[in-house]
Length: 149
Image (cartoon, rainbow, N blue to C red; front, side, top):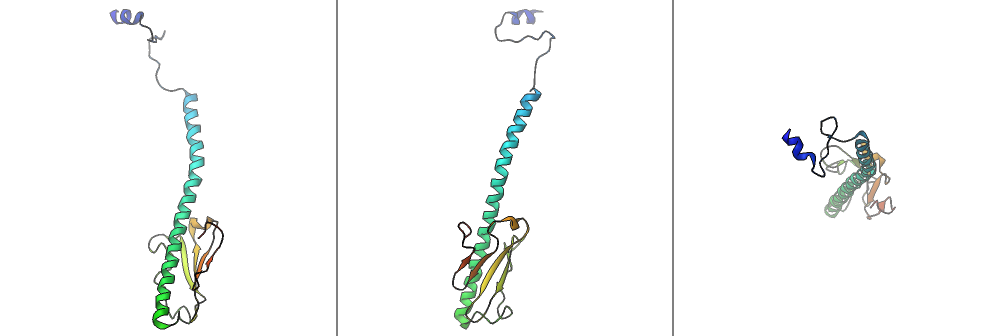
């Protein structure tokens, strides 16, 4: 009984008439937290997915440039890019080179003086707004829309 008497006149000490402490969060407080987390997730997830797509596109562009450099070296040695795709094979046909392919890479329009490398989006990367990325022997890149190259 002395413990009760000691806290009886203390300001700021809550007393429950049912002799138990009030603890925890109310359902409304929990629902507010859930709503805030849901709103933040709905904003952050699309932004994250867009960043991942841009990163994968950047890797595909780097792989196209690397293959174009290999073809230029071949042209320097043989004075030709080759007559067809069997004359010179590209060392890899996907981007990234290992693992899950987010782009497939193909060599086309290959002749003594021309070539075209095309990276086609695959899987979840197919939602990318830039679509196919191409690079030819003259360094022309498509699509030419801003942000794709």
